[in-house]
Image: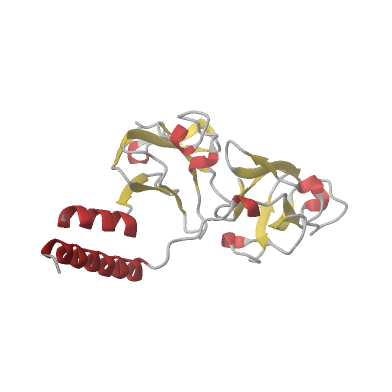
Length: 256
């Protein structure tokens, strides 16, 4: 075989072998939900529904406790005045119990408790990407507001009420996280804001009203924000995204 052809074949075999090793190491790529399967309705169904205007409780078909979908946030949400008491709830999709999410974003998961010492306006949230359902009583509602938010699809930057950069604590350990691959390479700043407002915010070192937190994003990177709700410290990590296609292209370039 011609030397050039032999070298190309060797390069191709090497690239394929390395790709195979990479796939085995990292496992299958995550499957993203298709917009075709987005819910047509999301109901906060539970023992609080009769207090929120439904004829009874645990009724997934009751429109009085339907959450509204906010396209700017890409999150379902709604607020109701709930009397003092102890309640439980879940998120039921499409007016049925066929698909429902409970504690820790689990399909058919446990009921989520809600304890109110006094009548309270409770805001509920459901994110169909992570399937996390919670309220501003059950969780800290924390958002990373900063100079990168428009890149995520927010109407603009520095918007604490845009939940496209919503920090979530699905496992309930007190650390709220958000990851994205949508921030282009560049230098940015951000802060943690609470309850979709600037009234309470945390900057560098977890200081209330502290300085903006700067961070740099390399090309082709995933950015992960972690917020410790006890210390109020926000950390930002970046990780290079390596795909089989990228690896093959790089190897071919190196091997000529």
